[in-house]
Amino acid sequence: MSGRFKIAVGSLFTECNEFAGKPTELAAFERQQLCRGAEVLNLSDGTVGGMLATLRQGGAEIVPLLVASACPGGALTADCYRQLKSELLKDLRAAMPVDAVLLALHGAAAAEGTGDLEGDLLAAMRAVVGPERWVVASLDLHAHVTRTMVAEADALVAWETYPHRDAQSTGARAATLLLDALAGRVQPAMVMAKAPVLVGGVLGHTEGAGPFADVMRFAKSHEAAHDVLSTSVFLVHPYLDQPEMGGGGLAITDGNRERAAELAREIAWKYWQRRADLEPPVYSPAEAIELGMRVEGGPVLLVETADCCGGGAAGDSVAALRTLLEIGLDAPSLAPVVDPRAAEACHHAGIGARVELELGHQLDPRWGRPIKIAGEVTRLSDGRFTYSGGIWQGQHGEMGPSAVLRVGAIQILIATHATYDWADEQFRSFGLDARQAKFVVVKNPMNYRLGYEGISRAAYILDTPGPTPAVVDRLAYRNMQRPYFPVDRQIASFEPVVYLGRRG
Image (cartoon, rainbow, N blue to C red; front, side, top):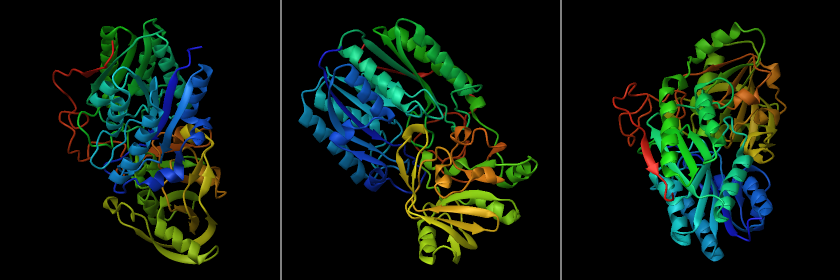
């Protein structure tokens, strides 16, 4: 037992894209997860669920703060962030005095006027509890870890898997580290080292063969050492536009800051050395379809990473769909698109009706033109479904009023709201079976590996316009300083940037 420590637990979890056009408003959190008071204490899944279970086992007194999560999108509106931040701080002030604060954060959120949202929030929490109390946070491994985050938190612990499936165990690890620190069993000393490498997530998997998996295994191998409490590796979310972005390593040792700095630098160097290996081959939609037609059976996945809702894109691209229609394949295919007006038109027309639509690029029109199509409405739904795995396993998703439109052999799932893609839950909620399709358009750069494991015959990463491309050298960063990879393939006299933690 750790003693009766009083620990405040809360969360503000989302990932933002500063190249996407649709801001994130409070309604996005209301659709996904917005819990207060006793609702928080009832959570059993995800990062917060892991934190709560571990704190209870340690005999802590838990004070619930706001828990809010939303599907990735554009930067939070100033009003949205102001509301969520003010609730968290109000709850914390009401709970004082506390021994510690434990937060489940993403690390790649932003708000209008606040580029480093998590750093800003951690600083505000620190101002309430003072310099001596413990503040610990969990992060996604795609976090943009900033100087402020390292300076204001006592420990940061990141997820270890991508595709993500360790949210709960990461919450438990963060809570365990906090309880050990409060009890005086350990004295965490934290250091972060970064390399200016910006890459998409396609080759960022953490299992099997792969460049990021190799770096992750190297980092985790050091946790067996008696003085290394935690290591984290970050494949930074590259669709922010902030200063000093990059991936690298974070190390927490038991009271040995010099050892933490040495290990963090080693991880950052390993990451830097594998930078070119993190960029995947990409194909035009026409090239991918031609290659796919040579594959026996299906489904063949057309991975339209540039329109990934899980990376903050609007989900309204029809780049792959346009090519499927132009080629005129007589092969069963599935494709998703977010288009509220088209979904409304299908609901108004009803099942069995034939409709003519301008589809796609309505929410974020910078990335393409709508297509004119005519088809039959075959299915309608309120858009609710349940996640079967990943970070939101068991939670409900809400596409809003949604429809299936059949155009020739292609069935198009038209949603009102963007939702995170884990596997094929959205298709299955309409009774659509990917195993019966030749081509399936998917829009997540990583989760398709598990979501379609055992059934896909091939997968091709598409080179299409959008705010979440697989290769980021054409994104117009304004705040990221040069030199950085991949714009600068070689950087003379490279040395990792090092942020020292506040203890140790």
